[in-house]
Amino acid sequence: MFFCVAGCLVRNSGECLLNILRCFLFFLLSNLFFAGSSLAAGTATHGIHDIGTELHVWTALPFAGILLSIALCPLLIPHFWHNHFGKISAFWALIFAVPFLLFYQEVGVYHILHIYLIDYIPFIILLWGLFTIAGGIVVRGSLRGTPVLNTIMLLIGTILASCVGTTGAAMVMIRPVIRANKNRLKKTHIVCFFIFLVANIGGSLTPLGDPPLFLGFLHNVPFFWVTMSILPHMILTSGILLAIFFVIDTLHYRKEKKQIKEESGEENIPFKIEGIINFLFLAGVIILVLISGYWKPGNFNLLGVHVEYQNIARDFGIIAMGVFSLIFTSKLLREANDFSWFPIMEVAKLFAGIFMTIIPALAILKAGNDGALSGLVSVVRESYHYFWVTGALSSFLDNAPTYLTFFNLALGKLGITESMVPGALAAKAATSNPEFILYLKAISAGAVFMGANTYIGNAPNFMVKSIAEEAGVSMPSFFGYMIKYSIPVLLPVFVLVTFIFF
Image 1 (cartoon, rainbow, N blue to C red):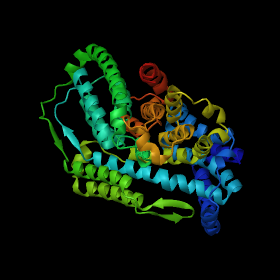
Image 2: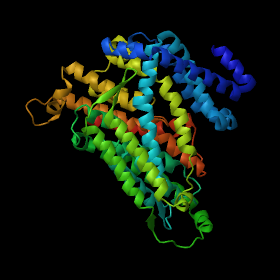
Image 3: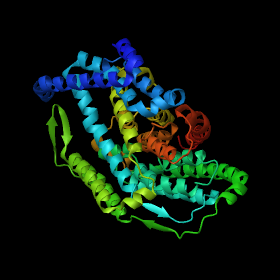
């Protein structure tokens, strides 16, 4: 099948892929129709068996393929990629999904439904809501992108990320940062450090900050435990990065200073924030996410997938907040922000393929010592192992299930159940477990911090890149970002964090 599809791509890529996609959708719907009743009955009595113990590592090749496409296609075939990235994403999704469904049938349907209903759809709804609401907030004023102002804006965004989430903070702050630096000649480094700090590391202090921490909150980790435990790690990491950024930005600014002065003959505009009503909708999203962590009204079974009522209410509530933002925000404000739907469309299409092809990788990882990656899982013993392995996998996989995998691994190794977690994390309690506390600090920091290593490490990374490119900022490629920025800047900082804390 691979060679047939590849041949079609050469002759008529767009039409062929659309036809294949239609066939796949028909095939999937047919499976849903015929396997639905048996699937629901089977899961009710026997449960869905763990495919992670059966899958081989090579089943993750489509996932590697879509990552390489994201990395190489913008460099090798930029025009084709810009116009057809959604079809390329669908292509890799089909390469995995069709044989997976043919072999596993109703079990395959279950796993595909599960990752889209439980992970992808809420993920996109949250991104869409925050993107839409933040797009109606306009920061006006004669902001000059000096090193001091840029460092202050990154600091504000870093602090804001733990309050409204990395996605919310990134969407609110990225446009003012770009606007303030519109006359700067070199601004790629500004956006890359923005991704490091605002889109990732800044969200490490509360469960609202980043999805893996929210997942920990849902599994009995106290709400403010992360705040108190990871604060020193976050202060050290962000402090070093802000200092490095200030030095780099100062060097660039001094070289550009004369040209910047010549080009900026604009009148002074007083600082003000417009579209303030959107902060109300932003608060609504935060409250909805928080409530979904406490309110437990139950669930219903959709073809074997247990869908929580509170999550349905949260998602519809977020959609309502986004719609209200569109209704009550002037179109002129969105135009002032150069607002367009392309960034969220790009993320939705690419991550639809990523979430499909990531199924075997996550299943194998979840199988632990019984899966094809048992060798990797078995070497995770010390706290620094948890930090680096969780972080490395979170750089390329979804950091939320990666966090949960090693969270459960730590529980199992120490004989702790989820109900015992609050007591085990209470530093002064007699039941506290210093080893587990250190493991969970390492898992939490690794999952959040190292999401900055790649564009796909955390949800807002790719969106910030897309918004910056739309604004005319020349962003590095997938590998360029890693080679020029994340590896030389972040890895030495993470090594230092390891020696000090783990």
